[in-house]
Length: 425
Ligand code: NAD
Image (tube, rainbow, N blue to C red):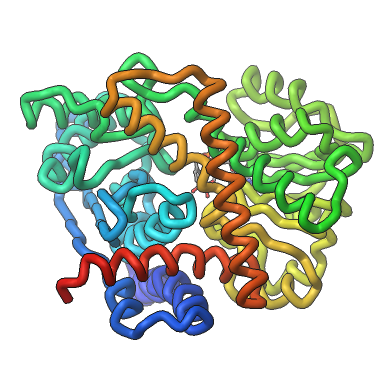
């Protein structure tokens, strides 16, 4: 890579962990967090980088970079996904791990935060290559992972297939069966019912709770959902099941708008029969993804990628409520614009916590060796999400701040206590 391009990439990534720290600092200042506690949270507990030589299908050997960062274990073993993507690097993993610390504390889970990743393009690798890579990564991280130490899960570019390989390899290394060492597994291997839809379900619960607070009747409300993958499609389906009219949906290939409401079941069927993409859907008129973000709706759910709401488009957003299904969809400099417009933003660290909440239920079921029905999982999830929402709302009101900073304060209150109780610094 040319030096200037490399430098630009480093600068861009340097800002990601800084962005997490900037929001933590703001919350810490309002809350009055002791400087020594803030200082501890500014540094990840452990960072591991490994080189993974893999024999490719053509006989060549390629060396991949693998990362795992444990940001905090103050509230329990670290928890967080594993991402396979070309832009994975130490700074991004560090930022995502810190986010997990905040997210788990808000969701009231007995977990710290961690995250991992491999710099690779999974779409350009064969299944065999991906399996060898996942197993090599697991062997290299086998002293980091552990049912009571650090518990991975899927993230972008990974899913239940990778978690099954990871579990199998970990069990081989340890010489015993430890289903709780990872979550997001296939149900046959100890996965939890309700896990797949959990993040979208949490978005639905958070949306309804926020609507109640700001006096929006969900039976007459309208919404736009960006992203039609795991989070976006389940969120759209579940919001529609509560009579919310979904006027716009999108993925990376296309966005569609229908004034009368998109038939979400029809969109789901279309995507399933169309190579998992929306392009070509006939249930609405095609618009751009930016038009979706600024559509005339009550609720906007960004559930695709980070950095889509910026200072350039925040001023044009017409929604009264934004519920962040994706991680980091709103850039820090857009926060103030949204605040000034009186738009309520339910932040990612709260809104998409449904996934890790049901991951926790999966881990609990694995430890008990006893499994719950989907209704039991959903009921526990909904109660947990509703409580997390109330706590963040309360803190935003008490500290006269945005819901985002209120959510960070919710996390800091718990982390502060845990760090002080444990002491030893
Ligand atoms: P996914 O890969 O299943 O789906 C992503 C969707 O976004 C796809 O429909 C894709 O086409 C769309 N997309 C990609 N680029 C886009 C663009 N430029 N414009 C519009 N749409 C675009 O991923 P996912 O699991 O649904 O994750 C989505 C977001 O939610 C990510 O930020 C992820 O970190 C976050 N998240 C996911 C979970 C989970 O349980 N899956 C939990 C917490 C947070």
